[in-house]
Image 1 (tube, rainbow, N blue to C red):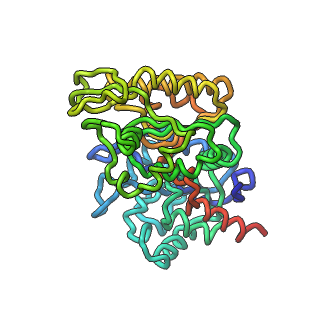
Image 2: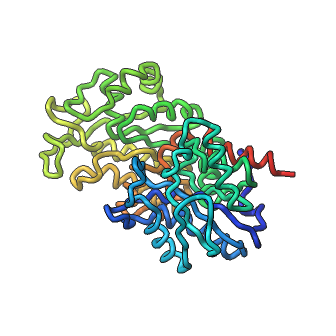
Image 3: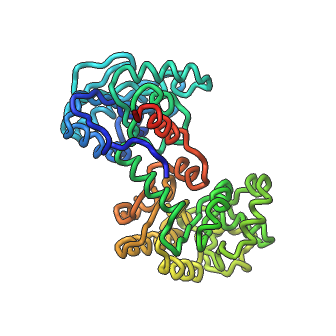
Length: 397
């Protein structure tokens, strides 16, 4: 288990606190916040710091992928949204080298400074030191950015005692427990498209009891086994570049693939559809969901589980006609959570799926970062977490 400071270790009274959040939220062309979920995620940490008597809270985030410091990617309206959620004044400053006397301060978009994600370590450290000079301690509450070696994530902790925020601490704890000591049986569901999830499968295969595969990924693997998949969308590039992983996954008795599918004559919500066995997928048609037999089998497996992790949608859940697999898996997981089963949604599109079904609050954890959680499950060291560990060693005196 990783060792780092948490908010339980922090006496914040009278201190200036620099907080890294991930407020990289969808914005319209005028910079208005269209979806505040990521902002809401860090509100408990900010409220905690306020309640414990911090002198000042300085909030920093990146927004989008700016090319020329576009005005609609400034953090002004994000600050306003946070202000409304906290019912506290949030002062926006234009740069990163000074702050006002306000209790709550929002810095400008970190990615407006090229040093934030510079490939040059020295440039990142200079910017990190500049950011660190604004505060007495650093709180990291951006798990979804933990897989990025950026100045605000990995350089700042070199210069300040650094603490995991509430949401980061929860994600690390639950995912670490699932990887190292899951309650058994442990079932993992993989959907979506990308074959890079095969690396995650290989890493957890020894400890997982069953791996259920759906989505385009399942039909990528079925094609590798010589089964006709028609015009189904598959990851041909992944299939070609990861032949050894494909062979290892498809030959494992723990890996379960669909036995039937819902096929469509076109990619559209009003497409003609049929439920057919895997051996009967028509040429020119495409798979858009798993079939009834597969749903039944997968649900029966899940109902015996004590820990479940889910990465990637089961089918094209955006089309009502092809959302059945995703809905059924989501509903059974939600019901199992209430019975004490640990249910983890691995962020990204699978998080979007459970949110669209109104089931996000019924899961043990909906990860804030698809890429970060996948890399964590894959066994990779996340730079943002390593930086917290190094800070612990440096300042634990």
